[in-house]
Length: 224
Picture 1: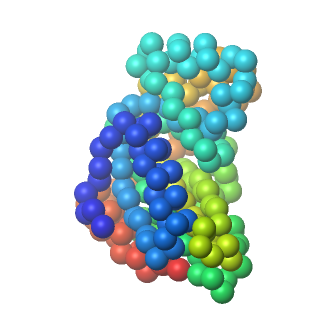
Picture 2: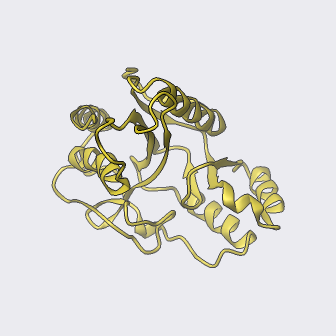
């Protein structure tokens, strides 16, 4: 597995995730653990593209230097750019195990919590972008947001290929990123406001390299 954090456009990264999921669905013995980052952009769930205001909102953000990309997982609008690192874990659930969404989210969140150390928790964070029950928090603020896709494996329909993704804030989101999300939400008439102070970055004294080393080891420990 690649030890570095890849840098590529958000749209290309989302396409690569789709390819990884298709590969594991076809070959369940394959597993991917991929860390990546992209230039600044917004990523929105595909459902928002059906709103009548979407096209004009996306064009306005693109003109301001915030291109909008669509993803197949649910959730809400999220930023990409400086300080944001994504982890994508793609694997197949064993054939003798029934698919359990909660268990798979736990498999995604536990390595991030372990890499953060004492003070990590999980749950809703009012005011955070893409808020959800499976946020990973550090010291009471959002550090990571999570999303998931799954599909039956082609050669064994009792097995499921899982694409588990987390967006991690190595540094707190920049004010311009929060402002871009809020402009986009207002433009598509979504009634919520994102706050800077709902988010955090890596714990003090934990370097990106130390965190990534811990993270990889923790993910390897939860392989199904």
